[in-house]
Amino acid sequence: MDLFKQASRPPIDIELTPLINIVFLILIFFMLAGTITPKDALPVNAATSEIVEPAINAPADMVIALDSAGRFSVDSAVVSEEALQAALQKHRLSADATVALKADAALPASALVGMMGRLRQLGFADVTLLTLGAP
Amino acid sequence: MFDFRASAPRRPLSLTPLIDVVFILLLFFMLASNFDQWHAVGVSSSTVATVPSDKPASVIQLQDNGTATLDGALLSDSKIASALRGRVATDTAHRVRLIPAKATTVQQLMGQVDLIRGTGVEHLGIE
Image (tube, each protein chain N blue to C red):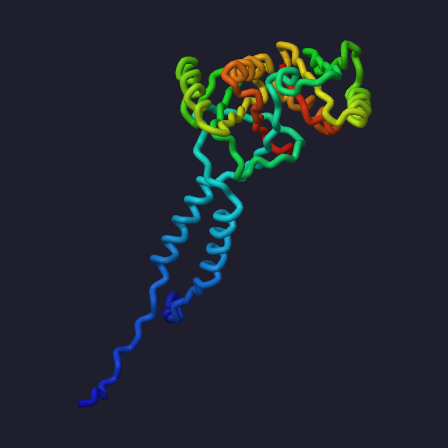
């Protein structure tokens, strides 16, 4: 009367191939669909727009990010007013130098206009505003 | 002379290290990649300076409360759009100056830029 004796069962052989297939597919999806970009130095919740002019693979040479408090960063580094001025003057020397502005949606428009005026004084008449696609 | 010994039985390849590496790669791409769709909106910091023209530019002033005036007249968005479409139809190089009020946000400004660009205006300056 060995009631607790369990019948010996053969070990379950888990087939891993379907798992690996799915993981490979997910990996390929993330590799192809996503883009790896450096993280912004400032938290910028960019404005949305419905304009369909994709900026993919055509980024401006220099990206200036403005957060909601009016602080700015250049190419993912927070800089001072003087450093920004110096960086722009250096950038202007290169041929076909362009500037893109990534402004926070909550930033007062006057701050953006002020930055554009500063860029105009330095010779950047045309600038690109980077926005996110409307959800 | 001849080696008739039975060859050693082939050991099955262990997939565990491969799965480990693939999982690590998957984690990296899941955490590092982003799916933001960036759009580029080309604007000028001064339309008047960059595109000289005999014809006067339209002036749109964006008010603090989100309303806008076209050449001083308070109009709805649809009326502004239709007026701009008419002007672009007669002058393809028609210029528009967009002047936001101090308290407006960038999001409100971009909404107006969307409206203006939707009418076919190519020379848009924000001042």
